[in-house]
Image (cartoon, rainbow, N blue to C red; front, top):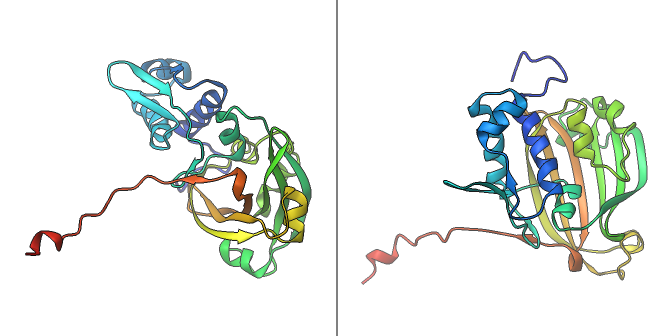
Length: 249
């Protein structure tokens, strides 16, 4: 979206984020506004309103029923592997209260890996953030995050123990568009065990991700180390047809 002023937030994205907050506060099956109602509420075209709602439908946060309306979807027990909800939103949708305990937060030199993943110049600085993520007071994950230095005014002023980092970034004009992640099995070291209240050597689900803005610029690099007994992923898939099967005799 070249040519936009810094801090510009597209209307569809603004509506999408407002709907995400609304969905997080509602119960499964609750009716959401129609596209026409969103047009009036936000003063946008039907296409803009439809695009915002459709993004939530693609992430299975809402269910669109032809002739009836759009409803808050029943949340899965675990996160869908092909979508990334903020931890705060994910836990609220499960009826749990999300909080965080900040272990570190400040500006520091970027590591070589962060320079590469965030497309920075050598010697650049990042905002380093390390938190324990909790649900109903139970530690679920320890997260180590590096953000580009231009996020500092937002991140350093945000309440990162009770509020969402992603919500703060959006409020600061960042448009978080998409990303990529790698997930693997790990085990808890001494430090993981201490902050997650699990035995040393306990199974962890480790996720390392990069999130990009609407211009394709990497904004955030995060490694999340989840206590495997408290967190999981659900995967939906299609079974690929074996094309050679029909040719066998």
